[in-house]
Image 1 (cartoon, helix red, strand yellow):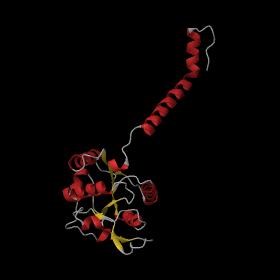
Image 2 (cartoon, rainbow, N blue to C red):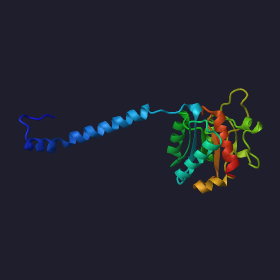
Image 3 (tube, one colour):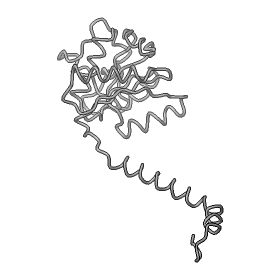
Image 4 (cartoon, rainbow, N blue to C red):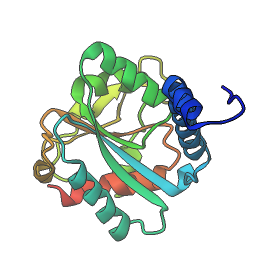
Length: 213
């Protein structure tokens, strides 16, 4: 784009009339570039300093889930830099499997509450942490919960991992979630094997088990 001398009002008007799309394009590219730079360079707390909770639900109240995460942050783990909870929508089995595969492969999130069929598919592949040691040492209070739906055997276990292990905790009894518009029937709570923060993921999960029943 160029101006021809001498510059007159008529030439300026003509220039913008036929070149306005260039300015709009440049403005759009500038905004996109700024957003990209901000997104890629903004500070993100390291894995050991954050806890993320993913809830499979299409109607859950994001405000209520954020309030829950804030409460756990304040009461249980104030030393963490970031504690979040968010609803995720899984539309169908085909795309749901792709979503879950991407999240798990990228170690995205720490604690999940997902439908039993999704839990079964990924638990047998070793996607989730064995919770039995934390039940045994008292870190997880599962009093009165039927744990059998969360007991599964791995498809390809390493030596010492044969047989069934506790990879998830049924969430049916956590009726406190109903206030957040989350139906817990048929849902399972689990922790990603590659969560990067076992200790605080377990603390977060135990808060759910002890405060939302």
